[in-house]
Image (cartoon, rainbow, N blue to C red; front, top):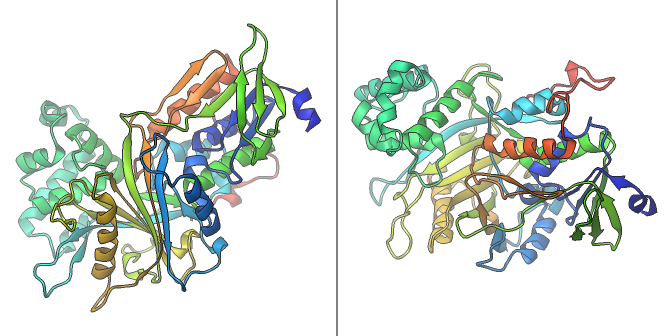
Length: 494
């Protein structure tokens, strides 16, 4: 440890969240002296993946309600039997699917970091439909993903199919001049109204399309909605037939963060987990910063990068419920296109108003359930991890529990498809527009957006931080040659 204090570091990075870890990857070929620390004992920060034991410890740190921190009101409920060992689980705090045309994947490819990741296909999207009467059970209607899929669908009427095909053709070319004239006058209007007026789509098809945008409040605008649907449709088939998005095995974005840190370590960065930063003292101009770590060691650095652990009053807050159920829910992970891989993830949406709380108030925002099979490495092969999210309200926690029950009812035959063995509930706050702020030699990442599909705006602050550290340079950002001994056989897009 003596050598750490004797070294003048080019940058000290505090925290191994996604942005700090991608920064470490970006700096891995720069020849900079990098010290990367994290107060936690695991990688990932707010995007970490936790074993059951890790989750118990995490809940103790974040159980207080109503705080201005990223996480609050955490609680765990477990059954007495059915769970495997703690390390058989790797529960993501912020699960996000990644569209195959995402800039994140492009950066992982150009930096060669993708070779250390295994990506799994995200399969079908479903929309929950209430039971018609007390004698019936609810259903999960699969959203058709291709032209052929639309026409073999038995739920959608022929008239509605024609309207849907007209819209899909429109959105694939929505930036063409003739199409711009159609939608730009309505760009700030709700997408659902535009779908009804321009394409005569009924409420069911409107809910299908809004589900594909994965809008948190269900009130997505025409401009944002068209952009999201276009991204989804143009991502279909990029890495293989039958899927438009992928999910990193072993914990999602947590695994991406670990790979970023691994790239930093290979490039010479020094890593210390279980050690954070106690204080940072500015010095005279031209002199390095003085950073005191929680182990009482003081180091000198030319720059300091950190992530914000707090959010302001304008932050968006989700209620989240992570459940482990004692069923594979295999009927929701079916291969529907010849030659496609077996999906390891699927999405179920509960449209706003489709569920009611005990006092009879309908849900005011959509509820999304992301289902991950045991193939993700997040739970044993005989179980399924279900990640539910919705905008926080006074009844949102209750509604998430009801959504889980309804999901299992709809996925089963005469009886529910399984029962929950484990529930982790918490509140998660984030920003709409991520940023990177600088003050002197210190740079700070804001909290991340809470999108359920990865938001590429997350990457811009990372590039800003890279420029802040390296200054003027002829290096290309995140474009690396393969290291010696690595070849294309290591590709891991499965």
